[in-house]
Length: 345
Image (cartoon, rainbow, N blue to C red; front, side, top):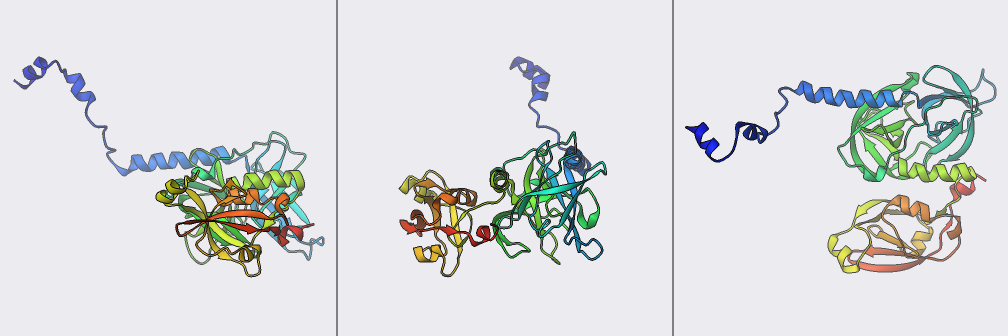
């Protein structure tokens, strides 16, 4: 009788089958297989782009200290991105490609403030460049793969998730780096400078540090920060930037405040530290202020702030717009040249 009733309503068995929910995987094996496929695909795609870097710190090879790290090729003509601390005070830089061939590398530019540096190998051919992704689109919990040469073990792959965004980290050379990515993908000495890659095989960060002896506390410089730094280093060999003396991180702005002031973005830059005797302190910036504009230019991220603090603003009075509690305030400020960039001259 049930079959007859269904036919009377004009519904056939095929239609009923099509409306059934998709089958749930019968075991965890299928889920793990999918995870493994993503990691192996990313690892294979990046293999030709990741390099091992060995650094000689003195001219005398018998007495000189040696260290190693990682990097990745980002142009087919041999430009390689790595960490500043990997090549710090290098007298000689040697790069080993995935096929085992070795090349002497030349330092192109170095920015300790973001712990990024560019080196180049000139005589290699058929190099494969790693594609850049977009670190602004990252979400906490998404899968990432870290690749490098920890303790000299070339091309080691680890996987994990993005644990947090918008962290601040003091690098091994003492510089405070803002807006870093926190991941639980295992990093060890030698991983520094290698790529942090998303599931699509795009570089979304440059691995820079882990906190020892803690486990699962590892950090990477966002690739959007690296894009800006790369452009400046390739053009000038260094970055001459303005300085106001704050530590900051990305932060959301309450929707009611966004609507009330008709702000162009729901994000700003939260001030979490103000240096003594700095332009920021003289201007009256305080902990908890959220920077939303500089000279009427919208600011949504720390990267936006870095890009606007170029050499044209050094020693020039500017206006920084902030949200303090619920009040919108304009403060006059005169950026100085960063002492760190001036020291590189």
